Amino acid sequence: MQKPGWIACLLCTGFVCGNSPLELLAQAYPMKPVRMLVGYAPGGGTDVTARMVAQKLSDPLGQPVVVENRTGAAATIAAERVATSPADGYTLLMMAAADSAQPALRKLAYDLERDLAPVSLVVTGPAYVLVIHPSVPARNVQALSALARSKPGQLNYASSGIGSQAHLAGELFKSMAKVNLLHVPFKIITEVTLAVVNGDVFMGFPSVPAALPLLETGKLRALAVTSAKRTSVMPSIPSLDESGFPGYDRSGWYGVLGPAAVPKAIIAQLNAAIATVVNTADMKQAFSKQGLEAHTNTPEQFAALIRAEVVQSANLIKLAGVKAE
View 1 (spheres, rainbow, N blue to C red):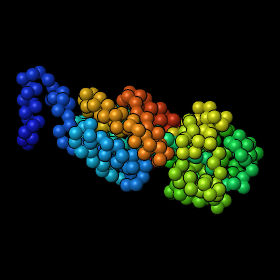
View 2 (cartoon, helix red, strand yellow; view 1 turned 180 degrees about the vertical axis):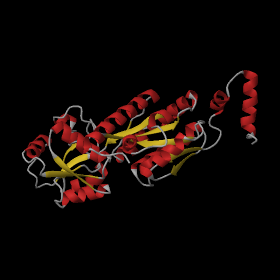
View 3 (cartoon, helix red, strand yellow; view 1 turned 90 degrees about the horizontal axis):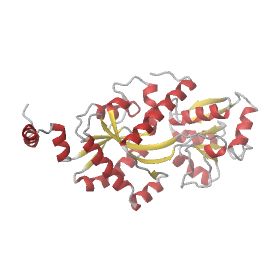
View 4 (cartoon, one colour; view 1 turned 30 degrees about the vertical axis):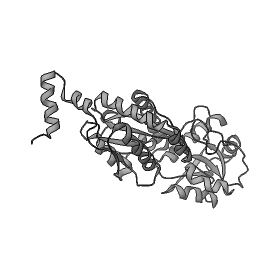
């Protein structure tokens, strides 16, 4: 098959100059639109973050950045598509923190850490908030834990599904608080809040956006957020870490990755471009409205974060007795 003219030209030049084809491609990058794949439906947190970043990235890259939703199989279809794409920097993935649990939950056709190259973290935020019904006689997490310990196996908590981030947040709480709570899985996060409001479950771990309207109307009481630090959306609510469970952290985050063999020069270019657009005042404000905080880092730091999340998620899934599909 004949190569496109510009690639053939670069390859020929490479033989003359001694540079490898990938080095020359990196020097010319980008020469066409870049795709950013999202494994979730439009309108969700991953999708919204991807579109906000993609729109701004077009300026420093000088090419359009187009978001494509490839849903299915808990976002692994999109990840596999990126992992098996040409390593030229034109196909990227917006990954969510929840995706770090997938290697322990199902057999994948790719290896998350081997086949994908971290580019940069984009934003962080509280993954979930521990909520109870206002009638529960507990004003803080310590009182809630004492109540749960007084009734071992009699109380329960709701999450958005077996193996979900909310489920793992609950299992980490159970382990650190040394309480025996029954897990009640629901299909969607809004059902978690309604179950607690209706008194069907004792406590729940809904997402911050899902809980906020009910917290504001007094139908739910928030005791703590699952991130290591408080969130600007509800600054009066402490983290579980500061509520007597040091080290507790189940944070939400989104970050960009590409295929594993993307040249380091392209990774560095993308990393710098992401840092430039994400850390502007208007983007920080826009993310803040979503309950998120701009937080970029180096590819190496992002890789370390993913590794730590994969290990913690696998341990919590094993603790919960969830079997891989």
